Length: 254
Image 1 (cartoon, helix red, strand yellow):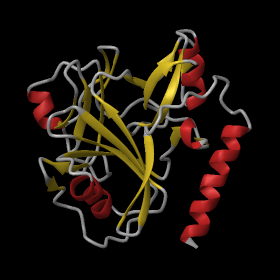
Image 2: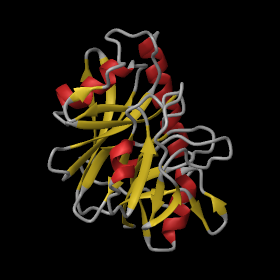
Image 3: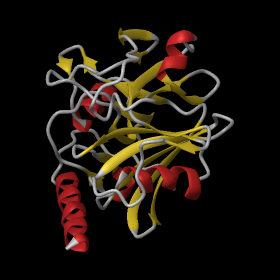
């Protein structure tokens, strides 16, 4: 059954892509995204190096973007397009970000440090920061006490891996399983690896994917259920309702 669902998901994504759901021409980036497996769960990983044009997107001149196609339409005015993208943090019903959101150096919403019953407030949560020197994932309380200079930043939760330690509330073999996505950062801040599960996965396995398989000491959960990926080199553009924040690697159009 799991294989059938995964196959159907991939087939629908490919159909949406080849049906021309995106108006901008797809741009391939060799070996940007790849398949991986960990403890019987399939994942797609996309790796970005520091210095690449990685951005966060939320709104444009016409308002909320909300889709990979809308981001590509916006970038077309620069002669650029997405090489890959995924949803990048939780949002309210009106698609406004939950917690800190910084775009092009401008803060749109403030950092939130309080606990709550949902995934976002399962402390510690964290801020993913794209800065001049590289990437970082920082406990939101530490970030609030000593903000970093981020060109782009998004807050989400929980912080799955914190300096090599799994979140204390993760349960091995836990039965809360969804399609999930998130990001991990290398110790030197020079690599960010974005992951989305192709099968339903619990938090413990997802966190250990970053720590144990990818050897990344810090990792942040973006979301579940609504998790989506745009990867033209894989012929993939996942369907779904409008998103809030989107993270994407920007490259010149061919």
